[in-house]
Amino acid sequence: MRLKEKISIITGAASGFGKGIAEKFSKEGSKLILADINKDLLEKVSKDLNQDFFHTDVASSSSMQQLADYVLKKYGTIDIMVNNAGITHLPKPLEEVSEEEFDKVFAVNSKSVFLCGKFFVPHMKKQKKGSILNISSTAGISPRPNLNWYNATKGWMITATKAMAVELATFNVRVNSLAPVAGETPLLKSFLGEDTPERRNAFLSTIPIGRFSTPKDLGNAACYLCSDEASMITGAILEVDGGRCI
Figure 1 (cartoon, rainbow, N blue to C red):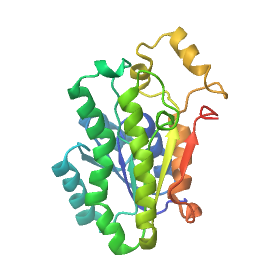
Figure 2 (cartoon, rainbow, N blue to C red; figure 1 turned 60 degrees about the vertical axis):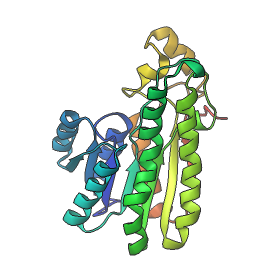
Figure 3 (cartoon, helix red, strand yellow; figure 1 turned 180 degrees about the horizontal axis):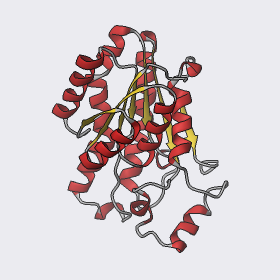
Figure 4 (spheres, one colour; figure 1 turned 90 degrees about the vertical axis):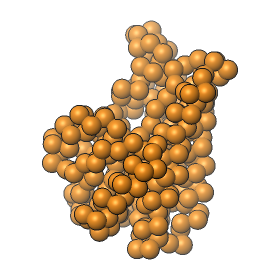
């Protein structure tokens, strides 16, 4: 029960890594508010875990403000914020990515962290405690060809994590990041371009441990960084990648 009674918000919680983090946090005693744009899946996961939810578009200022208002009115505090929601464009040369695709990827992957700072950080500063976890990617550390602007958003998130950490440390608000390699999630097909045994094997050949990240891997790592056990850790980028970035 490492997160007992802590109030945690997890974005992108309806599937993939977000769902894995939600399952782990729930087992560890946290009270969750699950946020996702996919309302049907969100309600199902919420029911399965017996946890609260709020239908949210993380790229929308008004939607994120409504989420913050809802949580503070109902629970009175925010202990943990996990910025997990993310999308990618399909693999293609950088000049072929449309402006619309670029804007959407940056809005979901990067602007969402800015909105977290705008609507959730003020409360954490006031209460002088809190933990923010940004789910970045090995793509932000060791970019892959043709995932160009997705890579850039994850690099942005890594720098944002460090910038937030150094600014908020005096308020006892910790900010860390997980950098997973591609995982068994709905985004895998988008990363590969086409989910075939050949493309999977080619991707796996770059991961020394020889497998993809799993939602359970991310849940375990997230639980540690957001728990009081990690009270001296801030600004860290923890690679959950089976050695991919070595």
